[in-house]
Every structure is written in C-alpha cells, then in structure tokens.
Amino acid sequence: KPLIAINHLEGHALSARLADPTLAFPYMLLLVSGGHCQILRVEGPGRYRRLATTIDDAAGEAFDKTAKLLGLGFPGGPAVERAAREGDPAAVKLPRPLVGSGEPHFSFAGLKSAVLRARDAGIYRAEDIAASFQQAVVDCLIDRTRRALAAQGDVSALVVAGGVAANGTIRRALEGLATDFGLRFVAPPGWLCTDNAAMIAW
Image (cartoon, rainbow, N blue to C red; front, side, top):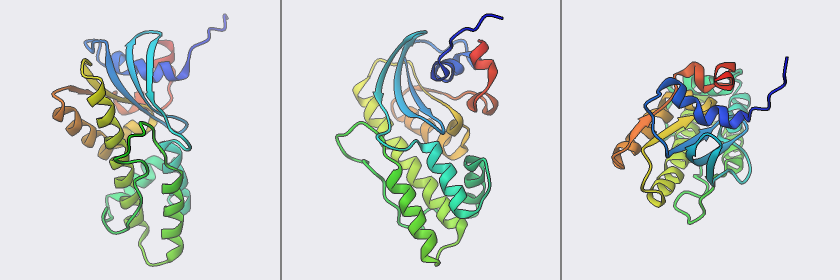
C-alpha cells in the first residue's frame, strides 16, 4: 500500500467540514488537543494562518495532568468534566495565565502547578478543584479566542476541533462567544473530535 503523508493537525482542522459540508472558508479554528492548543485562520485545504499557540503546555495535557493529580483516571478530559459537574467552579482561586494581555498565545503550565498546590493544601474536594480548573481553562480559551476574532473580522464561523472540543462546558462557552460576534458555531460530533481515522482518510 502507498504511504501517504497526511498532517494530523490538518485532519483536525478540516474535520468540521466532514460533519458539516456547508461550512465555508475562511473560518476561525480553535484547535485544542492533548498536544496542541492553537488558533488558526482556515482559508482552505493546505492554507492556514496560525494566529496563536501555546507557549508551554496544551490544554488537553493540562486536563490529563489534573486528572492524574486528583486520581480521577484516564483519559483525563472526560474524567475532569465528570468530576466538575459535582463541584463548585468558584471554590478554588486559580490563575488565568495571559488573560487580558496583549500576548496572543496560551499558557497552561502555571495552571497545572496551581492545581498541584490546591490538591496539596488538603482543604478542597477533588470535584471543586476539577470544576475550578475547568472554568479557568474555559476563561483562558474564551479570552484568547475573543482577541483573535476581534482581529479577524471576515470569517464565516467559529469552529472548535481536537480532543478537548468534546468538553461540553467548553463548547457552550464557545457557542456564546460565536453569538457575541454574530458567527455560526460549528463543532464536530464527539467521535470526530478525538484522534480518528475518518478525518485522516477524508
């Protein structure tokens, strides 16, 4: 069989059009996975402009590390989301790295360290730490994506893709952000968010 080189991130970037062929170029993409956290302007197959990336850890990696620290199991994203439903997102004061700054990028390493300190303090329920962590990630993603959208006014939609895009709280927040800008919000179904052969074959 021939070996065909397909960019894994391009598979994620175009997966929304596999689920919704009416999605028009260009669109704004928040690509959030275990290894990547980027904002891209998607202008067509093979045509992308990266507007922001993480300067340290990806959002998905932070979810996995938080789940491990709290003993919630693996995969970390769904485990944290489940625990967060039983917690108070305002219970633990956690940082929002780079929120409000002129820097376009993401940073999650400091947030992971703050989760470790909260756990070691021994005064918070795991569910409250999970909920507070998830809310901090949401706030970071929304702030950075809002900044990108304000600078790129001619896109057709806000799209989220990658494993972290399966998180319902993140999806709802991004949908609200899209509404603020008068844009469509498009998210692939959950099975197309995580790594899958369908997006690569397509």
